[in-house]
Length: 426
Ligand code: AMP
Ligand code: GLY
Image (cartoon, rainbow, N blue to C red; front, top):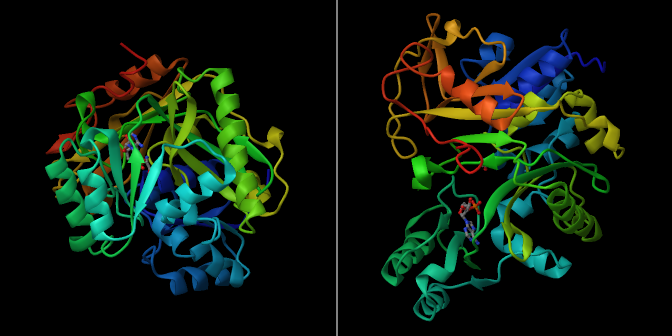
């Protein structure tokens, strides 16, 4: 066991609760801190009143307490929290801002893939409104997707169904939305196939892929409704054969890490590729410079080797394949959301049934919760991730659903998808 006295997890979602839970279980004596954490993380560690964008306070705390710091969410990673902590000589798990451009700029990522021969949809970069309008007017709206260049809180991708809709999206993104206005737009060929979330730990040279997993981005059953941060996930994705995983690993994950190193911006950390399995093989839809949420929840449920040594090996130039091991079986996560999510979620409702979970295969990770006078109350859109382990994906999914409902975990205005895993389970 690698003993680490103090660990700080930056973030407040289900992913960060799952990361903290795994790190604490691996290191029973460790002092765990969250900045800022949520209702669930306060049960396994200490929540600090520090936001994820308060780099000075995070750095001061980590340095003063010599805390190994794990950064969960995209924005602080893209904004350089990893670099700030490294400058302060804090051991940290987060890629550099230069490497995180893979996530922070879709135009950078598309041009990087082109330069390094990594398979992706055909693309066009519109650098002005008139270029974008011209593109929209000369292409069938169902043939492309429109992506804002920077981080856009899950609202950066549009799949228009008509030219009018596409024109409105272009105006909205290039003019009205403060986060994306006056930045380029990426038009990408619209692909069909199965989506897969592939992750790899990497030290900048060597990579170790994690199990393939699948997210469910749309809010409602049958993949309809608005895009969300993710409504559920499972791993391993059974439609990925050993050969598919090998192809994905060699043609995308390894090539990406090699390309970043050759370009002088080595990528160290966990790399997340949102991929599409097409008739032409796997292709990159998007990169992320962090763990996915909810995918991290089932993946960490299945990881049997210790996490902190893997993270330290990634940052320190010495990752070995044998360091990363998974249990047999499968895990699934069903996200419970609050009415109105993703746009205007209700908050303040009391959550019931958390103390009634008896199945040892269930772990509940909190996201939008806080603790008020001993009660857990809803404080955000994605509220809880109900995670279950099973021998098969089907068993894991059924177990997760069995914990939810009027006799199990529930709150007013709760909604969730009832078809997580519908692609693989009937
Ligand atoms: P992203 O944030 O880039 O992962 O995009 C959000 C969602 O939009 C993805 O999960 C896909 O469902 C869809 N999407 C993104 N790019 C494409 C593409 N080129 N073709 C088809 N669907 C896409
Ligand atoms: N599950 C999607 C994401 O983390 O971006």
